[in-house]
Image: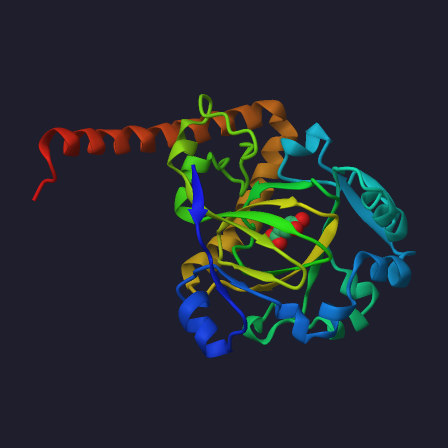
Length: 302
Ligand SMILES: O=C(O)CCC(=O)C(=O)O
């Protein structure tokens, strides 16, 4: 595993340059202080949400719930007021509780004025900002976004570590068939069980308050909240027809099919998917080693 590749970092960027250098070629980029030009950059903090939105009832997901780890369909574990959740994650201890894909803007449309969709991400999906909260130490399991949209992920109130891996490594990351996630744990990689991980290349970065990461369509991400903090994601459809279609198929065909088989076969379905993921990775490793051994014995074929 090598995550030492560096993501380009820019201070500000116009739409033409962003499209030419990052969106169209689907290359990640960090935009420093993107939120600072908006009201949110100065105003948004955990305290701000506690004071202004504390009474909103929210769904909370518990990473400690093993059942969720093995399922694509993360269902909420708890319901509570936002104020109580924010109190819990700011007690100073590590926490497993997070808020996921929450459309807070629906409860308070003023928020979308304080942090509107960045102009460079304007498009069909541009007016929905999803919020994510996590306590210090909370991780977000490695996955890529099921709808295959590209994402501008802006962070507030602390630091978040993100490992980003290009889609070409999906098989070596043991992507479960019909799903967009993997059961590997990048904090404790098991190279005996998952030898394909040795071959993975990716990027690692830390976002600070106001920074945004552009994640191209299909990029795998593994996130760790280094501080109790929160993020907003704005999405844009992938630039090419093939990736858009893949997103549609994921949502309309693969996800419902997987849900059905999960319902009937339960653990057996997951075991079968794990086996297929391992077989697929082993095939690639074998082919790679065959080529490497040929080149080392015979030199490069000309
Ligand atoms: O920040 C989080 O909790 C998850 C964010 C995420 O996975 C996404 O924006 O696609």
